[in-house]
Amino acid sequence: MTSRAFTFLAGALALALLGPGPAMARQAAAAARPEAPPTPGLPLVLLPDKPQLDPKALAILKAASDRLAAAHSMTFTAIATYESPARTLQPLAYTTLSDVTLQRPDKLRVITPADGPPSQFYYDGKTIMAYSPGPDLVAIADAPPTIDAMLKFAYDKAAISFPFDDVIVADPYADVASGLKLAFVIGQSHVVGGTTTDMVAVVNDNAQAQIWIGTEDKLPRMVRVTYFNEPGNFRHVVEFSNWRLDPVLPPGTFTSASALKARRINFASPDEAPAPHK
Image: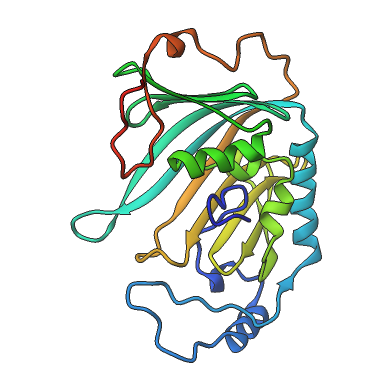
């Protein structure tokens, strides 16, 4: 479960509400009662001294990971909603929609038409290409030969990350399971994703997550996450839909003729102004 994304298995409810019963809540509180006052503005977090990992919760996560990892290709829609403070310091919600196409081990396309300025991202196993259709600008760079390595490269080079990173890596379970302090089954939902889902909570030192996973098809339907180092206890949510596993993808899926004709700029981190391409 990466601190960079932590999106495959994510959650945003208070730990006491997520727990399966009063006994576990009391155990968690007793094991992690703070010795000093919490940092102002940060949420109070109670974590056990030793990991408390429900085998049934881990089995649900592993089944979902195996289903995703076994797919040679996939497409899905991800609607991401994140909160950010307004001038009142209370949260405002911002939403983006992304249509995602992937082919393992080395191809990815992310089309984000809204909200905000439209953007397109292409990775063909050799290069990454970030395209802004509005101003007709594109940044292109050589990239590593796997999706996992490319995601790290894109983040390190230009702070590019996706709210569904943990879904598309080669081993989603390894990303999520690393460093877990709590994992337990909350119950089932018959509302999210138009199907029956198993709800699982996972917590590490950085974040708390709640995940809705299809009981029958083992596909993630929604994730909610709260990061402990963010004042305001703001929530990050990703809803998944339109899953297609192992579709046949036409040639040219992972490139764009329009992007290749656009005016080039260099990749840069958000605090740097992109320089014109030489």
